[in-house]
Image (cartoon, rainbow, N blue to C red; front, side, top):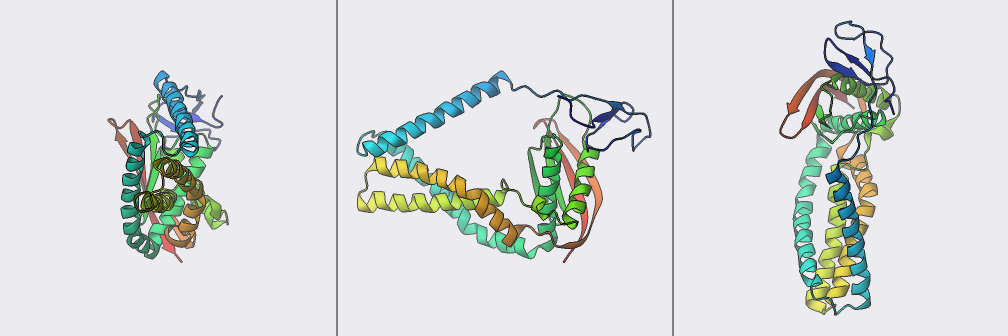
Length: 277
């Protein structure tokens, strides 16, 4: 299936995919040609990995049910329970260090605005069918990472158009674009909730003698709960600390393209001039 309004310039060797109908290349004024973007089929490795991942999930939940039914059996789950406890301890240490970072983020008003524009730019790019691996914001700038594609045409104009659209749409009232359920804030808060629950189960295991099967099963359930509450907690955290849509002006200063051959990805850094309110 073709991506709508997708063009390429043979002279500049660029691709335009920003949902705009062009007649000529905006860079060299050369005549553009329309191109089709075929859907990318998953590789044999990716299909095998997805099957293995799904099978592992099913086996874990079967073990959870069996551990609840026979809490003193299956001694091997003790190893898994100890591993979960160690990961929970690591998450608690990270969560203990997060408040200072949140305070710094809350005080960095240009960084909060850039964070929201990063989310909005990624949302617009993905709505156009452009894959985005990740993004990250800094004070007065952000970057988005696009995976390597089978064509040598860059996506600079698409990123620039998406960033401009993000600024205009947020200024016009589409503030929901600035908040992303998959933001790192969601991951930190979701892991913190799961880690607290798992730590409580560890205390019950070591000091109250709760059977290891019960602790294992409830620990897995706690991880699932953490994932369920991560998105709503993350959105709340973004609104309170890490994202702002209050700005009187925003302008793109420059867009820098970095190609990482080893990582098979391209990073576009968007430098901004911001006037947060």
